[in-house]
Length: 148
Image (cartoon, rainbow, N blue to C red; front, top):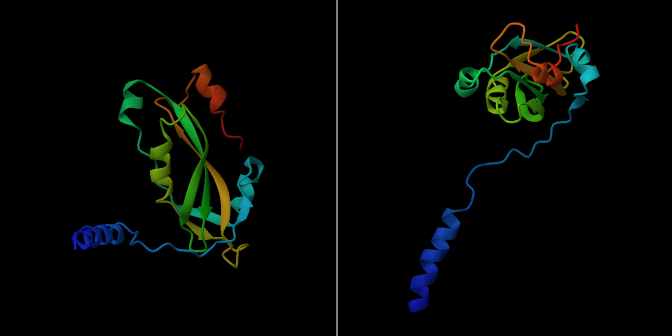
């Protein structure tokens, strides 16, 4: 009798701790255009129609810290960001969360070349600077200007 008083609450506790969210098990087959030399090619498949600028972290602004975050993002067949991975950042971890929070709000529109709405992986770099032309050597070394 004493064991049942112990086992019943334990069983209820264990079942209540079980995950209740559904996991989408649909696998998306992305065209990998995440290489730095392929960024322009990704623009032939998807065009940004809604770009949200990241918020500058208050502590970084107060300390006049500039940096950048290079993200790999998946664009699904609906033109939405489906996930991201930080490839690199400078200074490490300072701007990552703000860059990712902005990126997941972006929207893309399929181009004429991408008639099948092929999902792609691409690379996007977000720069954070308190100056229009940052001159700090470490910043310039880690966040070189974009080549046009």
